[in-house]
Length: 470
Image (cartoon, rainbow, N blue to C red; front, side):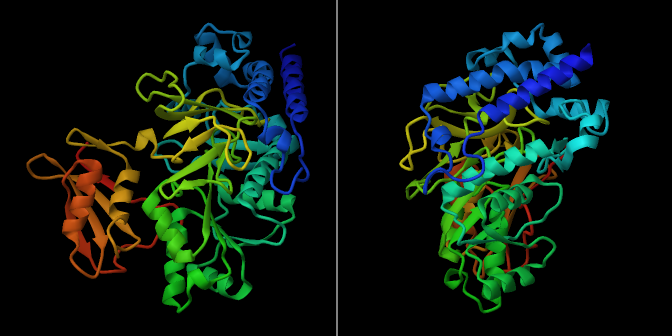
């Protein structure tokens, strides 16, 4: 009987996913992939979300031991969560819960709806969370997920203005990380040519740009800086290259004004961004459109609301905040056979707006993009700041190197101290101190290094080195 319920709820969920799969194979217009979904009214979007919620909660209950235990512990039934308004009955799921589940039920945990039988019959690819310490959260996805994922990503990349006459160079690793794979499969659906750059040295990738003239560069924000500088060292000018668009993901980019401006100047190119996380289905949850730059220092990121429910909550109380107020992101996944999740704490700070974008899309936007993850908060002698604030400060100093490091350690007197290690041909320590003091309200030490001293970033940058006594 239990197996029958599992199969029945899975089939109902798959039917629901198919019901709202409009314009899957090709774009509907020359500007918007699925006008029916991307330009839906607020009422239509909420109706889609409610329709999916009614089916996904019993599916989770019957197919994920993690969710069954949590429902029972909270004395809730799947029927208690039928609409978006019901979601607050369900406490936010933190990654710590998933870590504990993975430890108790190795190696995959029980938070997924992918069991071994399903993996053996239509398993596609396994991915792992990145960028966090502790036990990795591993997710196995099916070919159903692959199909849905490439469709969602195609919609996002199409909004950038990428078209079949482009060639996209993926200067990224192809390990168990969702970013490059998702882009690769989406480009296939879009009939857009690509050059996979996994496994290449930076020198080889610079030669690819120079010789084969791709028009779009896809990589992390930090690596786009590094690759551009290597090209300059080889006597090549990135701004004079064939690259017309930088497509970044994996770490903050467009929302950090000084970094964005540095990249745009270096490459003479537009900049677009993917936003999301492995846990709540690994397709693009957020993306930049052709109208992303509202003004010189404000950008906006669309969030794909027919695929996910995006909330903003207070980081301390986990209660929803009103539109226009600052909070951290919480996502409910509505586009996965293997990993739908209810109210997962993604944890990035932003402000939401439901005003229609100039591109015509109606989905909620993160204004200013994303300004740091809540679990990255740095507390230095009672002063709190985020890595993105420090990046803004360092990048504000003219001529400073692309690489830098923030060292936090405890001195002999037991006082926590912060030192910014930066590269510059001259002593500009006073400027660095002033910029960090202005933005973060803390006085730091500065260690001046010769240009080229710090290691170059090949994937995601890890610029905060916390060596304080624990």
